[in-house]
Image: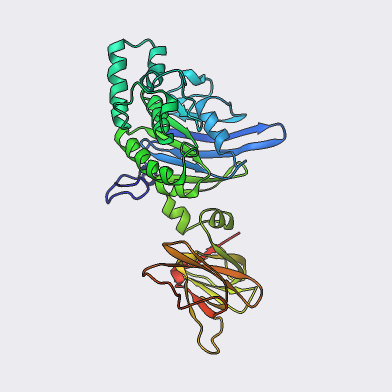
Length: 383
């Protein structure tokens, strides 16, 4: 199955097309609660058919932004347009939007079919049409045969799919999902991620999902926005944001990063050199740095892009090379994580894939090791 964020060759990417019309436009939106700014002058374009993810920690503003899209909150300033319509004055029930809550909010006294049909019954649709649409939706979410069960007779994953079917059966232009997989255990959550992506691709409905789970966002989203203290720290595809973070905050929030401080000593189209201000080392990057020669910057290197080996006799730190002693080794099954202490007291994390069945590692606790990486793994950050 193809996940949404790893598009097949030739897949459309409307956000790269200057002529493409955004399906959802958030323009200069701000929301305050007293002295607290929950959403701070956010502008964002989302395109038809995207599975877009708002990613952030508690208090980042992601849920408040989602509730403003749903109409449960009104912005203090700014505009929200859905399919060209300004929805600022449109009440929640009249918007072409549906929302799936983390709790699922299923009616415990109703069967699966009755839960899914509830919104259609409130609209007064004919019984035959309701039955046909409910049947098609239950088939889509693979719940055919469970129509007569009640929520307490279902697994967590099945209840999640009932809530999704109820949200989709009204054929909204936009589906909002608030931590939709948060109530599931890890293995079921991973399985459901693929199911949810598949359903979104088959229906073509635009999804906007809120999550604090980085892996969930990376796996499912066509694009994501990292939110922090009410503002957008960075927007892009999962690969863009992970491989090319624009700030130290994003580098450290999304995944794991070793971050160092230094001064730019070379800048240009052929790459950059950054001299460490913390220890005797130089960092080489293959891209032009965001600041000129002489500027203070940060350097980020992902643990999986580093290589650890036993240091040669007398080997010292150099360009994209650090030397230290192994303090900790963690075994994760598919990879090892090494924590290497440097002479200045800092430590770096290096992950190595577990490519063979080994019970004894060539590197162990206390070994003196060298950690090195290629220039393409070095990301220079302005702040």
